[in-house]
Length: 180
Length: 187
Picture 1 (tube, rainbow over the protein chains, first blue to last red):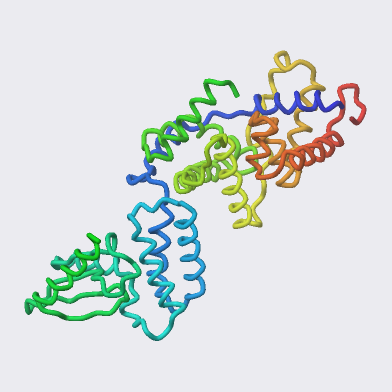
Picture 2: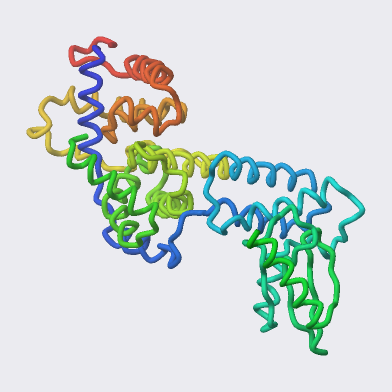
């Protein structure tokens, strides 16, 4: 039998055997359309995964993921967090590859810590989007403590408790650098 | 595929990627019958086919970000459905593949169908398709029964067009052996 004839027979078989589909099936499927019907966004998801992995056990995997994020940023990929992913990734790479200078608690991505503090209703300010990442003395994040002092995280992830006067000094320095 | 349908699909793909729920509902309306029949023709039972159709759409919504521009929406959806079907076969290795005879072929209207020989040929073909290995069966179903072009079907099967044509030839060769021509001679 020639291919053409066989093809026609197969077409006919398909037409003859097409059964009626339960009409409710479409509605059943539609009920499962997610309410937040959004495509996956790679960047922040990857960072969140790294956080969920608790880093140390899967450091190697995290490095691979972070490297991919960094590559995406350097190659012109858009970052919907205004550089947040870049900053966070850089800090994580520093920790994973740099070793001792970075305490585990500091390594929890600063932005995530910021979000956590905001959720807890703390008076917190995050400057990660505007500071120079190379400036180790720049204030990355600050929040007010219950005793009226301020807890500050610097660009190199140092943490320090300071009073209001010291904070004003630091902020003034930052503003001066920014205006230069 | 005609031009207006192609444009409609492009629009739908763009809306889906933008997170439009109405577009998701339209995708279901457009394809749920096709995907269901695809599952049935791959050998799944009615109930399983319904479940797998639903699973295919869920997977599609989850992976909508991976739909590349210029890629045919139907091929992309068939590819997801094909993968869902394969996962199901793997999960239930011992379950029996149904032939398309699960879908009834009318056998009492010879006047409409013409000769008895023709009916017999269809029956043999139906059984032949059912005994094909999964990959070859998928090839036949995509191209001849779901009416996808070679390019679309190859994309849906996740292979190059050359590979798809080669599989198609092997499948047709296997089917030819099983179908007796109308004059009673093996094809």
